Length: 464
Image 1 (tube, rainbow, N blue to C red):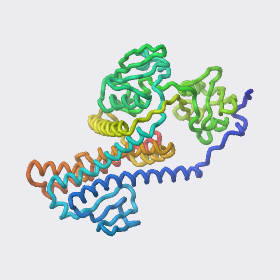
Image 2 (cartoon, rainbow, N blue to C red; image 1 turned 90 degrees about the horizontal axis):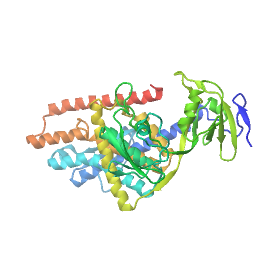
Image 3 (cartoon, rainbow, N blue to C red; image 1 turned 90 degrees about the vertical axis):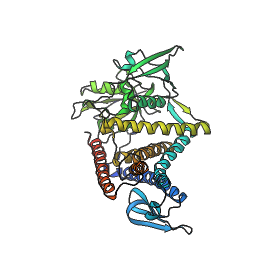
Image 4 (spheres, one colour; image 1 turned 180 degrees about the horizontal axis):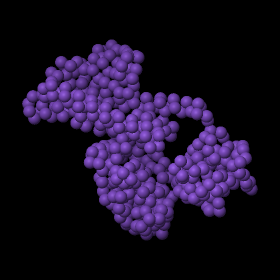
């Protein structure tokens, strides 16, 4: 039995009221804390690489610091002269070595000490991925929803119920696997097309080729979010139902009593299983009342709701909806997980390097660079999704730190390695004057990169 209600009424009594903005402080604080925890872990890993290599080569380490600025905590161990510090500005760290002792070491030893920091980040990422692959995870099955009309998938003849079993030379075990392979091809390799192998519900296997050159080009001619490439191709996992993920405070959705976790079964008289169908019908309503049939698992109700037009003229109800998809449990044996962890770290490192190269060539938008605000938000969201999501986030950022530090920019580890390469070829180090000039250039480049990252962060917050 169902009942009919209107948004002019008080809404469902069982629906909860979203917190006021002042009550968001616990969420903000947890986001900040998990961001600082992530930074502390990854900085510790990086600097520990330098520290262990220095000790191995007989170089005295005077200070090991997590953070910059005034020391909040410091201590020494009995068998070591190293001062261990936790400092006030937790956005990095450093290992301070005995400079004359370090400079007196052979070139190979100095290069090894410098390289060991990024290497430690890569090893950490490989072990983190190995943990995830062995622990197992629930991933969406690679069975397709009906591709949107005129997309590459629709034009190639793919249809609802097709299971993607291969892309290029790689097998596909889940929809996440498919996303990863498409990202590799489009962002990392700049491929013009991808070859997919699909199995139909009747057992027939078909092969299709999807063009991807124009699927991720924004209005400016620059490449936009690579995560949107799969969706732009028309590929989406088959959905069992549409679930309400988030309800905005003060929205018409909240007034109607919609709440997180509700399933939207119908819009009007049309059964819906895909979020796009719900979103499309809401946009098409043009401010006229529409009826949603909603279930919370224990009861089914009908909700009459009237969408509001935003500043862009698009009609919305103030709720985020997503697909509830069928999943498969994927887990690897220990050695296989370790092998896949190393492979994934290598592939992700190459993808990052290629993406940076394409940014420099103007083929990929610099808007993809993320700063501390975006990273903090990702840290908080991943932690909220459980240990495995947070470990995956740490692995990804650890790879980014390794690749960034290996760039041939003075002030970074890669800049020092570039100087050592010069010393190896010429038989003598660069002059102090040239190194000082390089340091200034490095500082300018790092400041410019930081400015771009912060601009992108605040642009995302402002919705630009």
